Length: 343
Image (cartoon, rainbow, N blue to C red):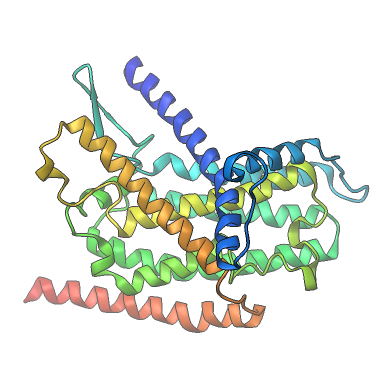
């Protein structure tokens, strides 16, 4: 690989990392504003104009808090838990195509850090490793409430990964690839996968809520039953890492949903505007982020609108509803593909 390409990819990696942290940071502000709007109250409005400095104040508060590790905790695993959760959340963004190609000094650079031909499998691998971050943190705390919260989180995430995998299989059957960039390229114009896989999209969206531990699937944390859940014993920035990882997961989930089902960075009718390729690429990236912000808003809207499930209801939905629906959807898609080949 040429030096210029390595330099561009390094800069892109840094930019994506900073954007991810900024979006996660201001998602905390947006969430409180959305909650305030739905509940008819003001929300944060003291730190800076419109409370825009509130995330910085919250971050400073986290840094300044006393860091406590329980005497009976496994110290190494106690530190490792939030580190795994945060790292796996950030690594997923490396394979998402954030835009098309930029031409600089007659060289073409892709706005994707790396284009893996097994991109979807990579996402599932990272999501699966993220479960370890929660499970290790809950077990290492040596607290029964933390352990129960971690077990509930792990069982929830594993259950919903199955249905999510089945929804993705239908997508792979029709697109014939596991590469995210190829899936995005096949959705140019209005050929978005949402129109061909509406049931698969609904299953994937519900599972994404559960994978992010967002309401109505936020059972790992329950003040009435589990105190603070798997991070009961955590304080200061270790707790901040767990909370931050949740918002990064929400951002990445919104990006994956937009990539798989809503055309990614492709913007309908943009080719009719007669713009330069670089300008079209930048507009496409901005359009991609608009889709992401919409789904982040959807995550927040649902959290402050719907009541949370009980644990048995959550398991019933995952195993008795979504899993059979995913299997039926897969068989119907395979049958349609088979009939198209012979008719």
